[in-house]
Amino acid sequence: MKIALIGYGKMGKTIDQLAQAAGHEVVLRIDVGNHADLNPENLSAADVAIEFTRPESAFNNIVACLENGVPVVSGTTGWLDRLEDAKQLVEKYQGGLFYASNYSIGVNIFFAVNKYLAKLMRRYNQYDIEMEEIHHTQKLDAPSGTAITLAEGILGELSHKQSWVNEASKAEDELSIISKRIDKVPGTHTISYDCPIDNITITHTAHSREGFARGALSAAEWMVGKQGFYGMEDMLY
View 1 (spheres, rainbow, N blue to C red):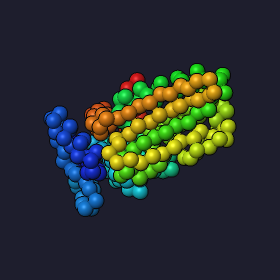
View 2: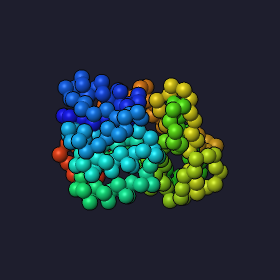
View 3: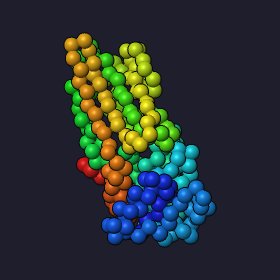
View 4: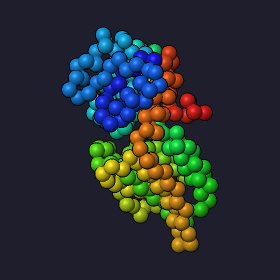
């Protein structure tokens, strides 16, 4: 498999190492200093692109891949206000886009556990729900895309919660997400159900970026030759 890496920070470099170890070829590496190299000629050499950049760059990077017939796997968060536009372009160009807020297999299991727990808690409104997410200081968006996915999973199951807010809130219809940025923390997400009698807490803690990188590489392998919009549930289930 020939891969275009769009974004060559810590995640891009980890994916690069894993890809080469698996026998794949990285034919294009795009970073801040050579973004002009993201052009039709260079993209034509790739079977698939993996995009981990910044929120303000992600959509245009995805467009470039779709316009040039290269399926793209994106893990950039913070740009989802353009997701519907991206889906329309997938149809227009008959291209392929795979998006996930988190590519870790463990996190996607955690998503399922989170939904199931929220479903069980429908009858027990005496519990106050709060979420905390902790990431490294280089992460620009808050809350994290993973936290938003977890929040949407909860809101889909609990009718008394109508929206999430990125702050502490005592409003009964709001789900609080507390974001913290601490150096060298790959990612921790905790969901707590608390009442005067007891507390129920579930937590996922990432120990390194490797789990995210392996998941993104697996998604890239899965996307080669595919058209349409996909996510982790399509690949895993």
